[in-house]
Image 1 (cartoon, rainbow, N blue to C red):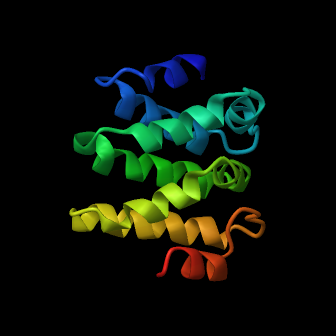
Image 2 (cartoon, rainbow, N blue to C red):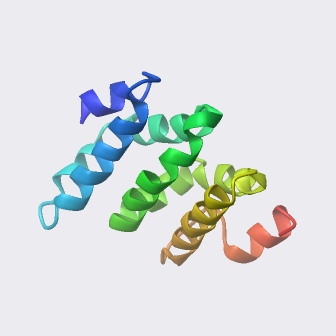
Amino acid sequence: MDVYLSLLDDMVWSVTALDSIAVCLAHDNDNHKVEQALLKKKDAVQRLVKFFQCCPEQQFVHILEPFLKIITKSSRINTTLAVNGLTPLLIARLDHQDAIARLNLLKLIKVKFATPYCPVLTFTSALRNYKL
């Protein structure tokens, strides 16, 4: 997992690394080893959030599907990403010019609010705070 997380800083390999994390998580059905590795590593979730926040515009559309796979597969990672600031970043990017990007952002937001426990932002407060 450390190799993939370190590759998030490499512009050439970052999207592939994120997709690899999503695939590993998807294939780790009952063991939850990948989930535990991401949650135990102190800065892993923060690196994911920072990667989303600082992702160059030309790569942004390509990171949304892997993020969707990650948060759909693990509600614990979904909640941890929300606590570490991903939800406001998702909402802030809803004005993206690409329609597919906006659609995927809406899918990500939908999954975020479908999580039983999302302490950072409730759906009602999102509507109020972000004037949706």
